[in-house]
Length: 132
Image (cartoon, rainbow, N blue to C red; front, side, top):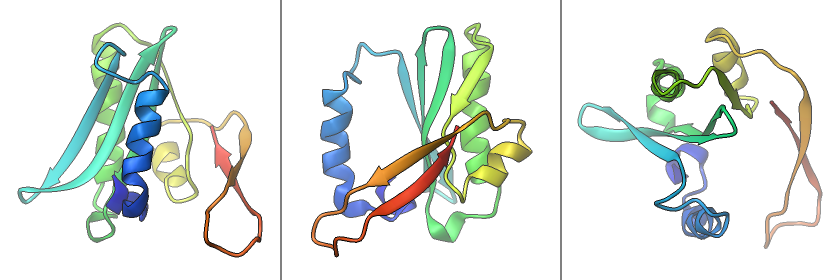
């Protein structure tokens, strides 16, 4: 996931956050790894709750992009959720992922401002729009 997001240095902190947020062995959650030629190249996470299947952490390493892997890593968890009776799926899309999600049937309902603080950089504020 770190390599797919270009943030390998932050993966340990992300995992700590993940646990602090209550995502543990009792949370209805499934993590997926996509493989290409016996190499892990993609990730996604399915979180189930309140009748909704949430898709998170969809990433593909740069050299495996544009081959439909990101779409597959989104569709597989959704199909699993449907098999468990879920009928609503949600996700937040990055600019890169937006066309992929739209192509597989997601519709944009609103935009959420996303502010990212990165230590040891200049003090310029970074504001990204995240589509939900």
